[in-house]
Figure 1: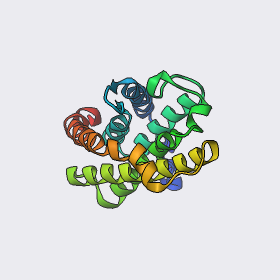
Figure 2: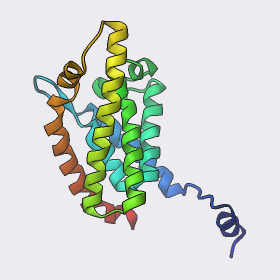
Figure 3: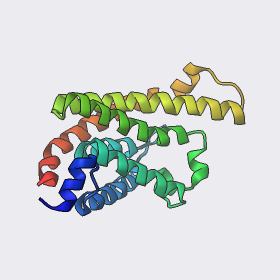
Length: 191
């Protein structure tokens, strides 16, 4: 048994393998590309949430969460990885920044559900739905605080009407697509 394996067993520490690091970086780039894809409508839709669900589905909770964090750090550093080719810390602290930060909480809840209940297809879909709800809750609370600070008071129903209700059906469709792609692609990535 190598010394590294002995240290790993004694400390419980698991390091990031080169393949994992490469996949995390690649998936952060995939999330950036997904954020640039905009579907025109009265309220434009991006594929950001799809990217988050796909990445966490493919990489699993730990590495998927790391990929989401890398994506956010790239955006915070000013790289144009957010929707509309935006970037910068100011974008994260803006009125819709809570939804972007909420991606981390989505990934964390998906990781928690995966840890507790496993990785079956049904559990994956359930974790994606839970992740979406967490993102909606965090993002809407953030929106209300920033909007109230910058513009004036806003009610919960108004915030939900502007920021959540128009996106429910498209986001559910993104979950179906992400879960289906995860089911097909994950066996290729694991090998």
